[in-house]
Image (cartoon, rainbow, N blue to C red; front, top):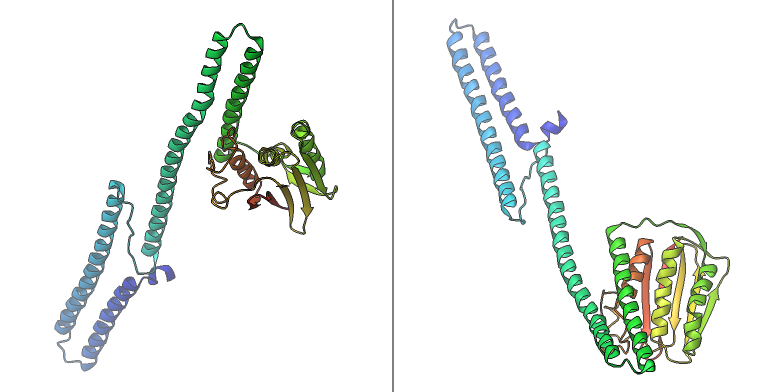
Length: 342
């Protein structure tokens, strides 16, 4: 009853009907008290007036309600026809207001889903275009190398060199495809993270060991720094992938004699892992774009990168509920800071 009477129009209708009945009752009692002997005719007249008044109030109320419903139906039809900017107006409280509020909420949700679908289609179109562009370079190189090898059958050293270059391009294509698959699976929620408490020092040592040969070949040093008792609740294989991408990125942009550091700290509410180098740094123009897929800086000296390592790292960190930040000074080095809630 309280919900029904919350609607002002229903309340006015009930009040009007009660007023009509009250007036009729008062007038009837007045005529009965006068005892003129002719009370029936006036009482009949006022009962007809009362009935007419109640019918008029009901008619006005249902006419207004019908107008509101017709307007709502018209708005819904416009939405079905393709118009996305609709709102069903209802300023009264009560069940009808609640119904229209839910319909407006549903429209907002559907619009959000539609916009998300549009963005997904645009992203898919752009991604396919980027993939096609990225694959053209190694495929063209492979065709050239194969043509040269066919022509240079008499020189084993030339054959070996172009076989090495071909293998390099094939590795590049494999990395591109693998990273794309990983990012796509993370985006689609197809990967279930198998989390457990992992010692940060242990997997940091594993990452250092996996890049030790390359670092030695290039004359670079890798240093670990942190409390060996710090643990992180994570999927170890994915975190190793994320941090490993940052280490590879640091090696790619650090010259001979460079130093790459993996540091970690435990705070009261989060664990922080930092990968820093003293390499070329990132141009301020690129800082806001480095986590975009396939982004390549016009200042970059890296001709082999495909622009998926950092986006993949960001996706992995965010899948763990963490955040990633970057701090870089051009010509002095870069630091990537990963924060994970404990």
